[in-house]
Amino acid sequence: MRRSFAPSRMLALLACLLLVPAIPVRAEPCLVPGQWYQPGGERLNGVALFAELAGRDVVLLGEQHDSMDHHRWQLHVLAGLHALRPKMVIGLEMLPREAQPALEAWVAGELDEAEFLAASDWHAAWGFDPELYMPILHFARLNRVPLKAINVTPELRGRLVEEGWEALPEAERFGISAPVEALPEYRQRLADIHAQHADGGGGEEGLERFIAAQLVWDRAMAAGLAEATAEGGLVVALIGQGHLQFGLGVPHQLDDLGIDDHVTLLPWPVEEAECEPLPDGLAQAVFALTETPAPVLPPVSLGVFLAPDERGVTVHSVMQGSVAEAAGLEEGDVLMRAAGERLLKPADLTRLVRRQPPGTLLPLEVRRGDEQREILARFPSREDTGH
Image 1: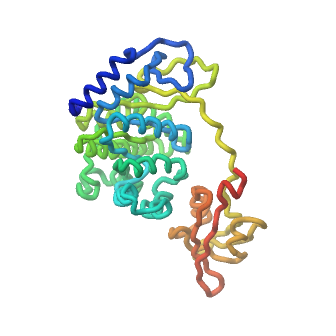
Image 2 (image 1 turned 90 degrees about the horizontal axis):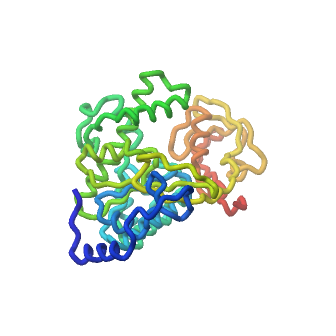
Image 3 (image 1 turned 180 degrees about the horizontal axis):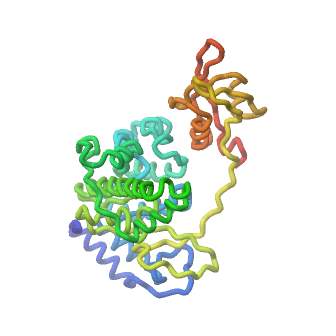
C-alpha cells in the first residue's frame, strides 16, 4: 500500500502534475539519449514521472555493476527523488547485512573512505571498484540519507541452498523468510544463463542449485527493502538489472512480501541510430543514454610465476618491472596467505589479484627460508598507468 504524504507535500506534487503534460508524451520511432521512455517506445515527461515516483514505497534502480554511466544515472535519480521526498533510505545490493554498522558510521561522518572500505570489507564483499559508487555514498553522507545493506554473504547463501531454510535459525538468516517459487519465465532465463557457464555446471541438479541460490539472493534483497519501508520513507534500491528486469526477481519477491507499490527503472544504452523497440514489460520506465566508452586498462598482474607448495605457493620467478619486484618478492619465496586468505594453489592467488582495485595494497604473508614476514604489494593507480 502507498504511504500518505503531508498535505503540503501532496499539494506541491499535484501542482507539479498540473503544470506539465500527463505521461506518456508521445511515441517515437527511435530512443533519444537523455529522455525517459515507457517500454513500448512512448516518451515520458520527466517532471511528471518524478512526481509520481516520489509517492511510491519502493523504487528499484537497475545497473550494470561496472558501468560508471549507470551509477551517474542512479545519482541523478536519487537527487531528483530526494528533492521531492527527503525522507529516504537507499538499499545497497553491494554489501551484506554484516556491513550495516559500517554504513551507519559512514553516513554519520565517523569514517573516511579508506576506513569505510576496511570496516565494510568492501573488496571481499563486492569486488567492483568502489570509485564507481563513491559519488552515491558521498551523496548519502552529505544529506544524511540512511544506507541499508540488503544482501547476504555467499556463505549464508550456500548454507541456505545446501541445508535448507528450516535448518537455519531465524537469527542466523536475519529473519529472512523462504522465497516464493520462481515464475516460469524467470526459471527459463536462469536456465539460459546457467547453460552458458561451465557447460551447464552439474546438469539438472546444478541448475536447481543455481536457481535456488538466485532466489536466496532475490529474497534477501526484497526482505531488506521490506524492512526499510516500515520507517515510512521512500526506499530506493541499487540492484543489478538482472534481478529486476520484467519483474521476475526482486519485484516478484516483494509482491510475495506484501510490498506491491514498487516500480523498476533501468538505464538503457542506445546507439544514435538505434530504433529497436523496448521489450514489453521490461520495466516501468527506462532512461536512454549513450554510454561513455570505458578506458582500456592493463590487466591486473602481480608479475610472478608460481608453483604449488605444501605450505602455500612458491615463487618460481619474478618479472622485471612488475608489482612483485617492486614489493621485494624473490624467487623461492613461499606465499602462504594473501589478504588474510590461505593460499592452497596458484589459482587462489590469481583470483585475489584479479579483483584487486587499482591503487590498493595486497598484504602477503611470505616465508623466506626460516623467516616469516609480511610484504605489501602495491598495485598502480589509474594515474600511475596513465589511464
